[in-house]
Amino acid sequence: MVHRIFLLGPQGCGKGTQAAILSERLKIPQFSMGQLLRDAAVGTDNLAERIRVIQSKGELVPGNIVAEVLRARLHMPDCANGYILDGFPRNQDQYDSYAEHDKPTAVIVIEVPREVSIERIAHRSRTEHRTDDTPDAIRRRLEIYDQDTEPMINHYRSQGLVREVDGVGIVEEVADRIYGVCTAQGGC
Ligand code: AMP
Image 1 (tube, rainbow, N blue to C red):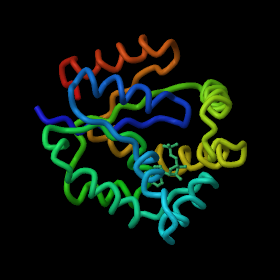
Image 2: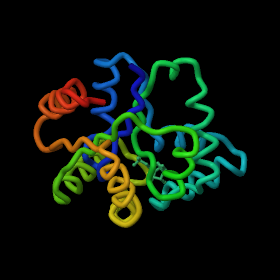
Image 3: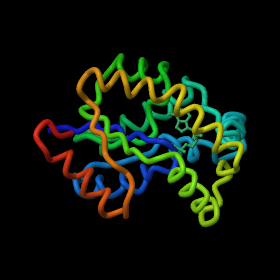
């Protein structure tokens, strides 16, 4: 079975960590839209500079850039048997652009209370020094999640694709929950 798994959840829910674990278990590649864009933002050309400025503010990178970066990654041969994508789609425009070609096989939503989310991002900003983990950018990213991304989860929910997973607990516990929903009937 070809998996096209989307992993969504508020910033700090553990998407990146969980995507990496699930990728090993299912033996399919995983990538995050945020990381693909950070990779595209390396360099001195105008596009790279534009992406860097937008990411540092916590705003969404324009849809045409996202679509192009994602298209290039999905065309790589390792995606032929499926993939796990985290951080996409974040709004209607991205939802529509993906829906034109394909449909995810499952959308895993990692749920954590807002205070856990904020605490984890604060911890990450002390250890990883991501330039977009400033208080203003974090607030903005969470606001975008509530306003623009949540409604996309509702679209997928109405299609029976959403698998909600409790993201509170240690990494291994959450990983086992995710693997559990993926291997259950109706899975991923
Ligand atoms: P993340 O690593 O998922 O927290 O994303 C970091 C930043 O990358 C976001 O704040 C956006 O600036 C950008 N980004 C990530 N995913 C998307 C997306 N699907 N659409 C537009 N911008 C994105």
